[in-house]
Length: 264
Image 1 (tube, one colour):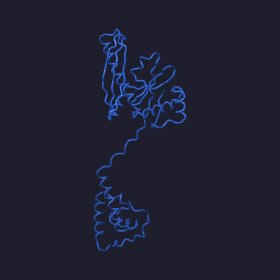
Image 2 (tube, rainbow, N blue to C red; image 1 turned 90 degrees about the horizontal axis):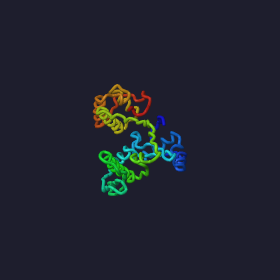
Image 3 (cartoon, rainbow, N blue to C red; image 1 turned 180 degrees about the horizontal axis):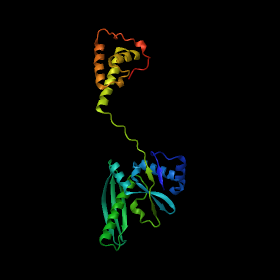
Image 4 (cartoon, helix red, strand yellow; image 1 turned 90 degrees about the vertical axis):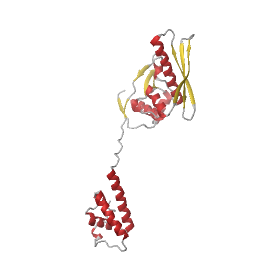
């Protein structure tokens, strides 16, 4: 398949949807369209495509998807499903071993499905492995059925004559790292900056007057250029000015400033 890049899951394009519905054969799609389908199935089921929950199976001349162990494990965890074996029986005459699994949703809904394997003539480890496979098959089939995924499970692929497993495409999902959380000092500075703005508004100052007052007290043109300690001292000055019965602007000539926005 080659490495295919995809930044995020998205809805299928009309062309891809049409070719998928009409033919039902993924081999007829381009590599990019197959990635579209793969990501769309993952998104619809709530699965992480980077873990390759699906793989390709060539069956009767058509390429289709089947669910891997990763898919069913994620479905159980993500949807908080309860899975239990409710029945098992050895059908001696038919040479088969059948296991019934039950999946219960958090809301109480129940879905059951079966896993059947041939066991005639098997003894020891071979018989034990066959029984374990029946249990696994029953559980996974029940999970897929409960989640509405009408596809084969990987435990079934080796029992289908002529079926050929094909690796899933290598997906390179670009994840944008989250911005680092602001430090305690940054958070404190933001709070003090907000206080400065509130005082300027309370004093009824124009941007020019605010800039002039800030410059006179801190020597800085913008509040963001001040250190946290400088801002705290400036807030104390503003508080005193706001409480004063009369306000004098310290003989600052606001006209010498250029009238830009409030100096944050």
